[in-house]
Length: 322
Image (cartoon, rainbow, N blue to C red; front, top):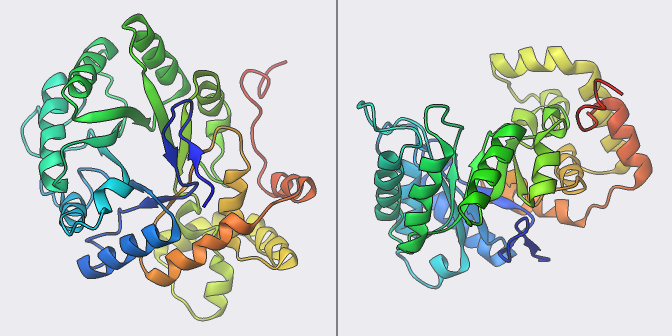
């Protein structure tokens, strides 16, 4: 495994990040344990979760699964760079969500208890909180870092100007600021190229793309349907919307002799600022297959053909002006 720095930080992470959103709702606890153990065997040290994962309000189901896995010992916690997130509803009262100093303190302590650890490597804002000033956000994060409860701070779903405002506010406080941005980015969804990726490059944030396979559309959906696999109503609607692109994409992958899912991930790893796409395997087989991604190098001609199928953006303002 060739590890990479997360943005401008000295933190070394694997170029694939193990997403845990399926742990609990889709993948049993025993299978989740097996996937995490195998991830370590494969060299993946970067895991991502969130306090809302498990989708039972206030229960933190997925964080509990991680905590019970860490509690088995064997260096599991020490080998893992764990990133979790806060923002979403964890209760029915007004201060059970958002990025207020109150919720940051409570949410962090709750995540630490659930994951049975005394620190979080990367504590991420799951969404921008338009009702909380960055001065309050950073003061609360500074206190957590002084207490040794967190090491780095990350964002998720921030706009480019949010990143700029966050970093400038942190700089005025002589604080390191954001280390990473977790953004919706894939071949089909490339709006991040307008301002988010340029902001991350300029401020030295590592980009962690979520939904790298566009909800499965880039994972060989046509091949799977041809083999009799079923698809959700939402998937069918999205496929109908993008069918011409997906047909051309899977044809290109056939020419390359590669699985569409792995080509989509390899494309992300070829993009400036991207550190590690989030993979969300539900089974061991999916995890092990994904490792093929790290063996794929897309040449300039292939990258150009992908841009023809899925047109991207130039950085603003050149994308829409001169």
